[in-house]
Image (cartoon, rainbow, N blue to C red; front, side, top):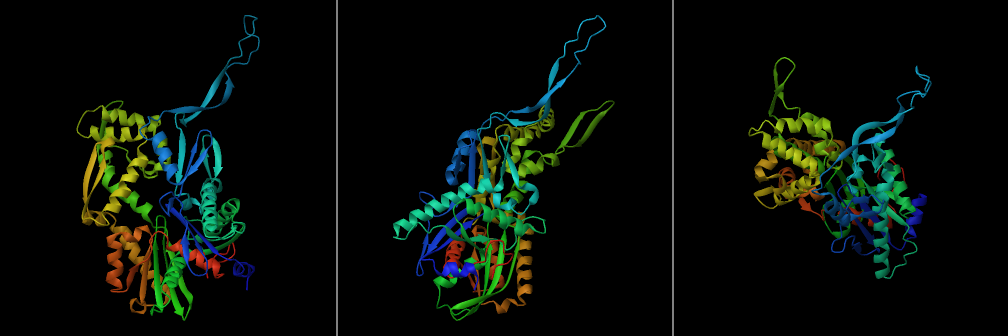
Amino acid sequence: MSDSNQQSESLKVGIGVDFGTSNSAAAVFDGDRVHLVPLEANAMVMPSATYIDREFQIVTGQQAIEDYINSNMGRTVELSAEVLGEGRTSTGQIGDAGLPEEASTERLYGQSFVDGGQRGRLFRGIKRLLGDSASQRLMVFARPFRLVALITPILLRINHQVKTLLSQHGFSTETADHACLGHPVDFEGSNPSRNATALQLLSEAYGYAEFQVQSFYAEPIAAALSYLHEHPAASEQTLLAVDFGGGTLDLCVLQRHGTDFSVVATHGIGLGGDHLDQILFRELLFPMFGKGERWRRSGEDREIETLFPFEQYEELLLNWAVSYMLNQNQYTSPLLQRMAVGDEASLKFRRLYDLIKNNYSYLVFQAIKELKAALSSEDHAKLDLPELDIELTVSRSEFESIIATALDQFQETIETMLAKARMRDVDIELVIRTGGSSLIPAVKRILEDRFPGKVIEHDPFTSVAAGLAIAEYRGLGNPPLSDEAP
């Protein structure tokens, strides 16, 4: 038995923390009941968000989002050049007239990218960057912040709320220095060592957040474990857990052996709700911002007509946290020229200009998330952005057509999972569906068509945290930096 298992056996409670791409949750298991930890005033789940203002004061969760909206939404962004230093324009030596030349200097400017009016930076989705060794630091008001430093405040808040719940239930808070921590089967990124890199950073952040005794457990296995705890008398022996969240799609196949179980295989890919949001932005809104429109302008000896170079804007538009970088002359000058044409398409470029100048990117993505959520329960929903004079009615069938490639990836991932487990569809007796993106009707339909009568929904936003708490109590987690879950 490992030291980690020995430690966990002596714990009076198990603590599980699910730090997610979009949202986070935590739970405590006392050996009998799972107690979800309230992370917001009126919710068990909190946004995985950190907001840092110009005084480097930090807030987290829903308040972070609200502070960002209140201080930055609708604000005209003005980027200025950053002063890199000073350089001499003359030597100060004696000139032809016998008098010393004035040793004047001038400031040297870098690329125009400093947003002097920005009141704060919002960070959400940091989990997606953990496996990328090239993105270990992000600039915040000219200071480099490690990803660990952006995650730690969220985990400190979770630790505080865990202690509050333990105190309310009569448990000692002095031993709340331990937790089982969730992780995807595979972190995002192309780095071959991305899993080890990400786990090392997570372990460091949890340590700073006063979770000193750590174990790790794969998120889809945790979701299945929480189901097994809730349904100890269930007859199904072979289970497929599908955890479709904000950043990743993770699956595992388990086999039950009496009151115990074994993991047959796991599989995961970098596909989640955030990716679907980007697809919707690209397909629904890019044409309304000028993609595909032509641009006629004067050349040296003739008039030039080409497609407007919209591709130069796309990557920054799709990543709202850095889209303010579009407010540079290289991006805004072509827009001003195209808007001046005064044709019908000029209105589209005016929208794009307004989005950039007023920092509306986060607003756009929130509207897309609301559209996606509405289409989970309605046949039609509106994408309403009055600030940009956009109102679209989207049908569920249109939505499914737009994300068709992602749905194909979802089906292929199931195929791969079953192949790794060396099983067929008929071998699966129960499918556990969890994670926010698992609420999409097309995802439900794919699973139900493939496993008719075998699919159940299981606590989409809290099942992983509950399972992690149970895993720690039972000593199932792996020591930090272990590559594989049990």
